[in-house]
Image 1 (tube, helix red, strand yellow):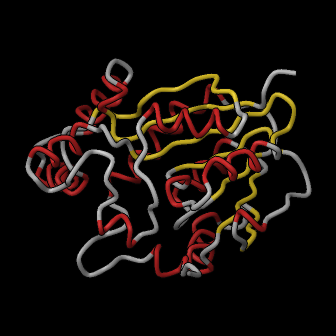
Image 2 (cartoon, one colour; image 1 turned 180 degrees about the vertical axis):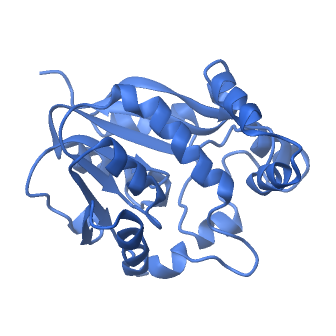
Length: 244
């Protein structure tokens, strides 16, 4: 069945696609990934409304973006004010005109149908010494495991109806993500978790709004994620092409 990427990216009456917490997470991702990035052009695969794209434009002077949703490109172009170049295409159909020092696949891999094959294809777009940054939601996040104990989710790696409506195909853990990276013939040079998380996204948003938690608390959760990666909101691998 042909997918409607515009519909998958929209909010639904029963569930939102993104929360304020998600945008805060982008800053933490850049804090973690920035020191590992290489000099040279960057490619973002999947931009949603351009919040992470804007952060990439602050870090890199040369940013390309590929996105399957025309509606998302319209919003991301407005967010980036001409600082990034956009291509409306499915990743499976995109052929780059150059190699990239940095490729970012942020909360996007879980949306793809042929994930290992697509990772192998993307790896071929890396320049020598380039890095592929892959981040996904974490099946073993503390908040998700609590939801399982509450009976809200059948098991940690389940794809919920809300996630399915937004195009998710799988829910990764660190080991299953690494398995797809290995199957793609890529080499993981660094991995970890981002943001120790015991509350759902909407609960964190509500607690921030009520003043129950602060930015300092969020910073503490980010730092604690280094100790407990398997309980984090997101997991990541930084990948390179196989050594010759």
